[in-house]
Image (cartoon, rainbow over all chains, first blue to last red; front, side, top):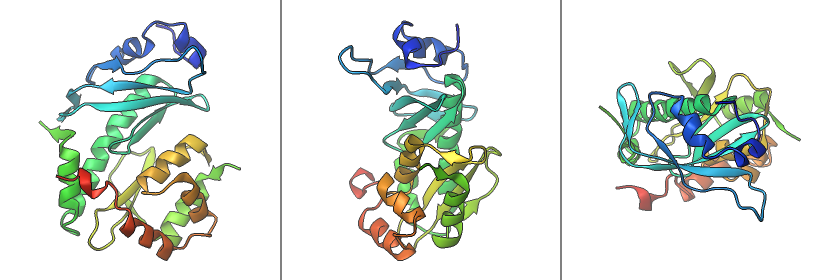
Amino acid sequence: MPELRTFADVRTTPFPFVSAAKQYSTQPSLTIGGFFSSEKPASYITVLLQTGPLMTGWQLVKSLELKVELDSGAYLVSDAIVSMYGSCLTLPDAIKDYFTSLIEYFELVEGQISEEPANQALLEYLSQYIQRH
Amino acid sequence: MATKTKDLKEKLRYKFRFSEDENRSSDHIWFKLQLPGIPVISTKVSHGAHEISAPLESLIAKQLGVERKYLLEMIACTKSKEDYEAWIRAHPRPPARYMR
């Protein structure tokens, strides 16, 4: 599959993010949660990250809606729930960066529990979405 | 004018007293701020880019629990550490209603 560089490419390629996502073998499947309007140029699309294995040792236990946008030639993937983001020149690598960030954030919060008990509630909140397996 | 990555890192470290969380990926830094009684505030900043784009500014601002405009004021020194802490205490992230 050719690398997608602009949203014009996206418009002329059917379900590009599903195909692109399949290049990344260790992630849950993605489904299109939104698409471009013909009336108004879109600057981003949303995709649904479904539950399943995330990376080695981790799983997504609740679906997350991801926003995918092009930012100065790079893909920027983010969510509105955990407020995490990933960025890279290719979509599979941006998604991988997002996963890495999500896991690192979880580990960061986990490491803070001994310093501040209020982090336990945040960790439980995050555990609604990602868990070790 | 785009925010310089170096300026953001310096402001987080020296003005707002964020510390770096070690043992993470080599291509970015995690900054964290632990205030008493509230969950840790943290954000990820890339090592590579010299400047931060507007969409990225918005995402970093969100991780810090503020709007992009507020983040720019933090960098421009029109918001103090005390202003920021007061804002965070008044607007916890994530909102309490989402906590189990």
